[in-house]
Length: 418
Image (cartoon, rainbow, N blue to C red; front, side):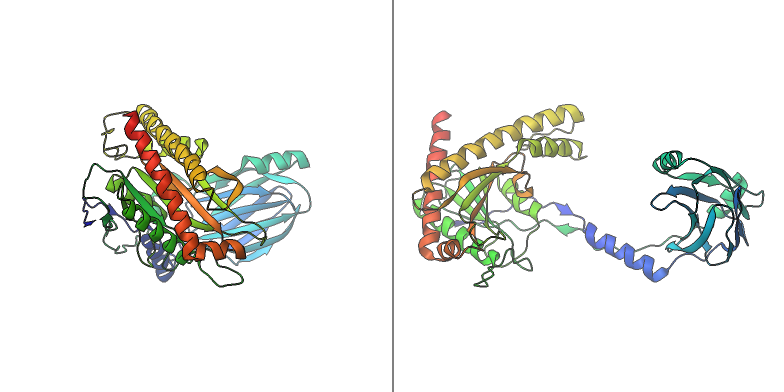
């Protein structure tokens, strides 16, 4: 029986498109009309003097070694004026660092640093005082970073009023991906397993160098085989994150499992390696270090209303929320690790595993805080023997049978413990 599931949809802003639109807008609009141009640049043994044909609100300077140089950034000016090196400054180069900033680079024959800097009263001249130092002191100045110099306050206010703004229309918020159908018994109390076929759509995944097989096709075929075997067993419900050649971002994959209230999330992949001799299946679960980091990130989110099993954490501070999330995620990690060992035992007779099949990693699809998750690399697509196994119906059925046996034992244990 197929049950159609629906749930409240959430929204997700298309931040990637927004960023691209802003970049395109900046390129199309160009930089604001320059407030001034560099009129002259002069260097002596004691100072660098940069003159502009209009007031400048601010500038900054920093030292660079290997070789020794002084760099000066000035916003809102056009570079390219006459330059006169002198003292330790042997060459002066000018160019546009970005659409609104000119950069001047002073190549040095001896280590000197910018000891101080100031604008003239009208903001039209910047003078940088130079001081000879040892090479070690110059390196120390490099590490100190950038020094900023401001024009008189009245000039800064006047130039600030000349700022430009750009308004860019954004795409409307995207709706959450539609939830898939759930197959199996109509009894909602039966455990639910969500199986994720890795890659898809424009992302083919790994490719076989000899056969041309694509990981996205193999993972979908294996996921379907596991689903069919579980439905035939009749003891668990099952859903696929994708049942066709479509692309899902990583977070959408385990969010489907969360929104469906899954008891287990399994992501199917096929491995690849530079050596054609590498072969065997691998099972990944979340590492403890990755769990700590994810718990901290989740605890910092503004909307904590539905982070762990629907528990509302919005009234808790970040420390308490982090502890609660951490406890929940450690439980799911232990559950996932226990199932990984069980899967290895039940499938070992029919599925070739690597020498050390259970490994831990910080993989995005494993980071659902309240759904035990594992990633199953069913074999190496770069190994002809593995590829033949996972591409054949017999091989896929063997994998599916191992999953069914392990899942039925896993959920029977859980029911008995309750």
